[in-house]
Amino acid sequence: MTVDSNSSTFLAIMLARFLSGSEGYLVETLLILWKVVDGNCRGEKVAWSDICLPKNKGGLGIKDLISWNKALMIRYIWNLVHGSNNLWTTWIKTYHLKGRSIWEVTAPQMCSWNWRKLLKLHPIAHPMIRHIIGNGLDTSLWFDNWHPDGPIHLKWSSRVIYDAGLLKKAKVGSIVHGEQWVWPCSMSIDLLEIKNYMPSYNPNSSLEDCIKWLPTPDGIYCVASTMASLKTPHHLVPWFELV
Ligand SMILES: *[C@@H]1O[C@H](CO)[C@@H](O)[C@H](O)[C@H]1NC(C)=O
Image (cartoon, rainbow, N blue to C red; front, side, top):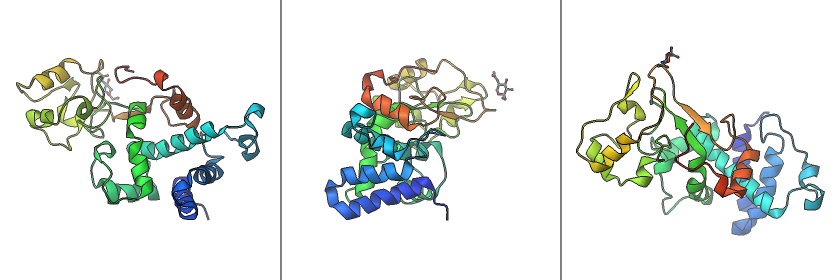
């Protein structure tokens, strides 16, 4: 039987929680390592024995294990945003997102420990993902990271959504006309500011949007580059850095 590696890692987390209560961080990390040890970064295999070596022999220290765990949790967010379809993302989209953007969702009072923990990683994960607009149909206008100033809802108040006369769930596609950015007319100062500082490229309605993982040069998620970004957050590409 083949098991999708994301959902099996998810099951591993659940199992770890079950076995060890809320102190299960390490057990959980180890379980995750055990599950993904040969699937971490396209083709890059790490032997279990190498990971368990003492740090001075080239193994990972506890801090590394923690950032490894974080990097793997962040991969779930990447999978959700990037639209990789598997059991887990389908489940999350159906029961938690219900058509909303992951960036729009906050943890409800009653929700699982895992889901809450994942949502807490928003501020770390969001700057790592950049949408390059083609037709704009796959990118949330207000919540995704496509504007040079970062996600619009983080910098400007939700008033701007109202001023623009567009829906909260609007896609960037609603301001893409062929190869032009076309915003609705409005007297809103905020909207003027947003319009005046658009991406340096033009959209192209014949192309699909593209999502890039910024810590990796080829734009695809990878555990190693994510861990490196977690360790040196000041090297993280800030909102304003464009392609
Ligand atoms: C838009 O995309 C189409 C399809 O790839 C391409 O033929 C066209 O040249 C692009 N337009 C611009 C201005 O790049």
